[in-house]
Length: 346
Image (cartoon, rainbow, N blue to C red; front, side):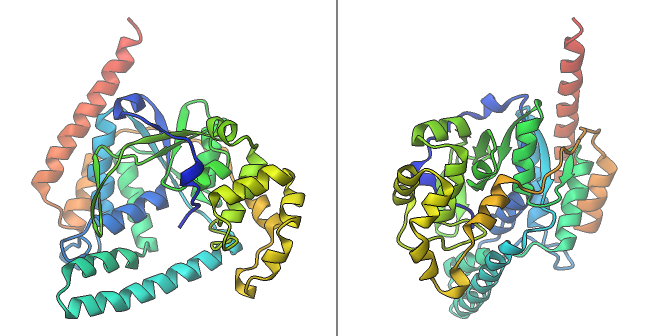
């Protein structure tokens, strides 16, 4: 679900060429859910192999990442570890959404309403352990490093962006990355100018968001931004405070300034919420302020073509001809990188 502060966040639209030679830490779960939601057939059915195993995520990893690598980017995928207990509310809510979507999907199917089927099927997405395992296998075979976070992948990606000089930005659709302190956030990381949604296509452009620009524009510091996020609603308190939108939350934060005073001012409203929606702001603040992260190392390795063919063609019935064409592109990418390395000596 993520944090919604879009209306008050300054951003800059950039061209893909501006990310050439840049290393990006990608929030893996965020991207995999996108692939599972959007890479589907006309009736909403995900791509599947001959054994009816879902392959939409593998298709996204293979084809879309090759397109990005062809533009000279370096990608590092960061996977979630153990989620904080507080996130269980979000997981429960997502389960409820999936169950409701399944009912609506079946109704649409009976009516042969393909538009409805596509809409509701995208809300039924599940990412299981086997998908995660094979996603890591394929990424590593493609020479894309995989980092296993201890906690939230988004927090780990933000941390690596802060501590490793070679990492340019964190890549995710969620604004939570900013609350975790990512100095730079890239959204809409795709070469396509349009994104497929259940209701049609929408125009998308790559966005660069700089944390310093956000804080300067809003006139607040990072602690206050975290407080603003809690007021609006995060994955740890999905509903936030009903009736308090982004701009109102900013007003409250700027008026009271200190976290303790900010939440003292709306304590009655928190206590008036249903028991299941009440939250301990200090606990949430601490999760953003001191997330469970580690200074993980990663290396860019050679492409393992045989492993890629084994995963895609042998296991999951991908077109051998199409896979071979993409492998040719990967060879070209590797050659360019080698040549660039040699050029440094002249």
